[in-house]
Length: 535
Image (tube, rainbow, N blue to C red; front, side, top):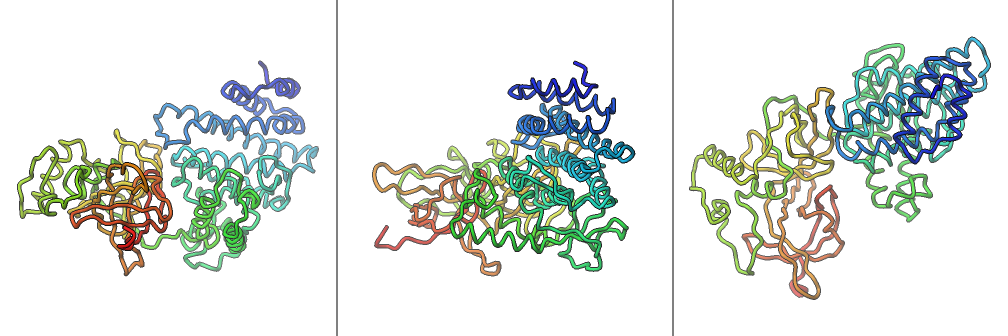
């Protein structure tokens, strides 16, 4: 079908059936590309794009779900899908820019200039969003397109004019400034550390809170917690003191946004439903509060929230996401559920025992013990994968590797074997991103304390008690104001639920008191001992 005529395009759009998203996306991609090439009259070109806009956004979102569940490598099966989605958004941004340039001469769309600016910025921002959704490194030039769109709106004095936008779920309207700030906020919110559901909430919330953010040319303030953006650069917001002093440098002010977040958090605490606050009907109140609280520092205070500086490092570390392998890395033995209520063997004996009754000969040589442990882990299929260490801080690591068999996911519990450490420590995957060269980068947040392997089970009021499962205990750290906690299998936490914990020191009955952290496959909980009269 020929889509070089706006009339033919409008006729085709009346007969469109978006149920077949692939066919619909292919048709819309061809339509947008051919109109861009044929350059029909600006008013007719705009009419086609606006008529197609909601259907186009729907099919783009549906197709994008295919690569949103896991980080997408550049050679992945859905990579072509990603490229098709990005190409369509890019052509849309170029189309709105072209219409604005051509109409500057003809003057038939003077009352639509703010709409053209907002649409251009939104579509260019969606290119970035799709890379975030796929957890892929943003290629050079993508941020430049967003900045250019906003700079053009500022030059024309259009940045503050709101236009109708049915794609904006909260306000149903948006200005070029708000479209631009929405992209900046999503980038600030650690998009590579969000799963598919959380990123969807972030996109909605960035639109929700964008009106409360400001950008100004006042760049005198160079405090570390002041962010800015260079409209002539190719990146998002960053500490203003580290940005070049250019005519396009602007200061970001999120103070009013921070006040708005605090007000919304208070309302959530008072029992107001998230949907009534513009956060969406699909977000549970507790999940809303946790995510919104995590956004307060980057959005409201222009702060990354990092407590410790990172240092560039060289070398490798071991990493595993296998639950049993983590236990083996910590204790030196494969976990076996206790079968009796009797006391277990001496802890030194436990550490020397391996599966099937085998033993590792005791050795006072730490290097020999470590090497023997590594060989035994590999023999049992419980070894670690080697990752290149890029930098580290007290709180964690940034690492990289050419991906192998094991797949990581966001917020997953992992065991980390530092290059200079004798024992494994626990961490959580905080973000994942594929670089354009196919290497996978990850951020690992370390959980405080030296872990111990424990056997744990929930206690049932009636009936047969369930089998013990492997868990981990983390000690208190008064210096960091961290209390003792347990790492349990995912979804175990229920307030006041009782547990039976067994380790070499004996058996204890505990009550869960608070959920400290919920990961993809674990719960970190605070606890208290049960009174002897209630055990």
